[in-house]
Length: 302
Image 1 (cartoon, rainbow, N blue to C red):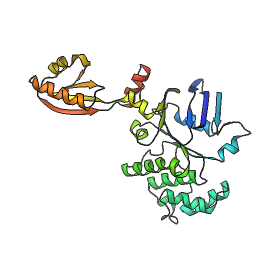
Image 2: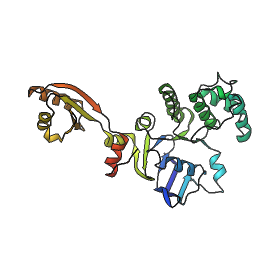
Image 3: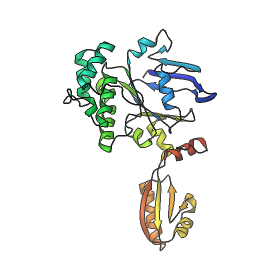
Image 4: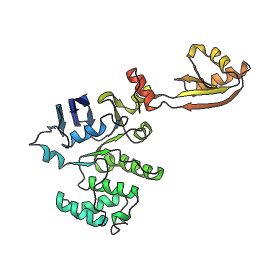
């Protein structure tokens, strides 16, 4: 697959501080690329540079195989949809009227505008004023406006922020469907690993402006594999029995890393055979901060 987006040694400096530093990433055609990092890591700044909303201090951006220059900017943006921070809309107008304005400004057909509203399931709310929409409906309207021209590339900056669980699930399923159903490549940012894990095919992790990981979700799981916590009647004895696995005691539980279901069952039997009661067995997934520790050898405060 071709790279839809590529950056090389991209930097952005504000007030003598590098918010993005030597960033080289690739977003391939037909994928959902999760851009992951804590708040303030440089995700929004990077996305703004990809859209021409912020000018790089140095480095190169290529979109659709073209350098992102002043000459190519309009042609690139013609095929790019985006939702950065919060949706832009007129609250006193209806969904239909907001889309009509977009049609005129962006030369989008009425058919495509209405189809975009249907995709985000707002086709039954066409004549309702946007000010009366729920937060989740406003987010869906923002996505409809971003995909109305059926762009080749869609850039979304934390689109599930502030949504309830049902709204998050709705947006997630919509985003996952865009490449296969409509041929739209998606780049989406989040500070939640669990969110990216459920919708992306590839991800990049940014911390303090630097890309510290880029690869498939499968390879990310090699870093973020869960630990198994055993709550027993004798944590010290449990640690001694399992010393070859380098377990850790946390409070009244013993953590064992990188083991599968079969090994978990064997440990359970071993403990019981040695007179140690097992009260509870739980899976503990690594947090994003824990993954930063493993990737960088230092903490990445959230």
